[in-house]
Length: 164
Image (cartoon, rainbow, N blue to C red; front, side):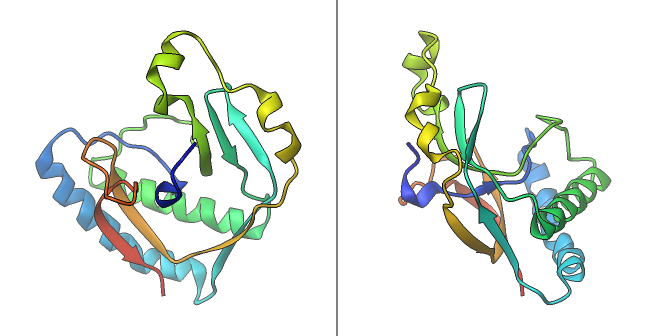
């Protein structure tokens, strides 16, 4: 299970291997702020989470409702990706990235993962259509998966853009 402090919506994954590229990535995120605010036109982006799904029984996540807000989120994600590509930083880690809210993942239990143990669908079947609530997107973080996490369990954050 994910710790409460580590909940986040993953928009995309990228691989930045050189420390000097982190500064470029931070600049790209900051540059994206105006573009994102233009997409939102002063309106809140409120996402609904109407159930769960999984990635190959390795990750269980809360789905984002297929609605106008998700379409805006996709537009924001595409804008971010293009901004990072323009800076020659974005190397796609997973081409079919699906914005999602991770609830459980086997990566957190490598010993079990090595044994071929998966997260059995019977564990979360009753939540397939459970409404987990709504969340207003208020910021975008550029996080590192390699650096030590913060005390609350959230990823090390290189930069944050608050959405007005």
